[in-house]
Image (cartoon, rainbow, N blue to C red; front, side, top):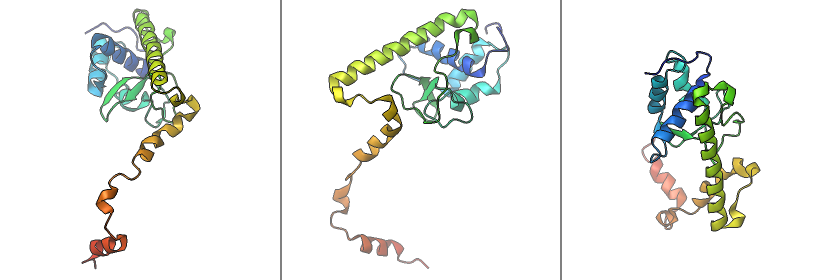
Amino acid sequence: MATAISNEVACATEVFIATALLHREHPERSDFMIQEIVSRAARENIAGEMRSGVSVHASQHCVANRAPNPAKHRMLFATGKHTRRLFLPGDETHEGRTGKIFPDAEELPARYRPLLEWARRRFEQGAKTRSAKKSSENPSSIIHPSESAERWLESLFELEGLGKEHWKNLDPDEFVRKLREGWE
């Protein structure tokens, strides 16, 4: 276990450090379980104790695609119910999330500042990769940031007509009548 650095480091900063360290240590992995992030933060022991706020920040407060409650950070992205990764350009963001993607350099203990620079380069590389991929697919498909709040609807529109072959020869009123048989 590492020696405590400061108890004035914010929980969000601890979560950022732990997640960035996991990404750097395991470049083959795209995301991590919340408990892995919390355990990594505990191993770093930045605040001198494991604060309960670290877990809450990893599961909710720092997560860009979750409703703010109350924090608005965008440091992490929920890839699943219990999995997180560092936020990348183009990730879905809840409309109420307007907070930091990175902690300010002065909020980090000096030994973690190179990690912040590494994470910023990773983010910039993600932006370049995503931009290159989008323009190679279809230059008109690049979504302007102001449209990001409406992107979540795209998958719903893609579902239109799905399964229609199952309902083709069925009268809707007759179907409902059969469902209601035996109701009191």
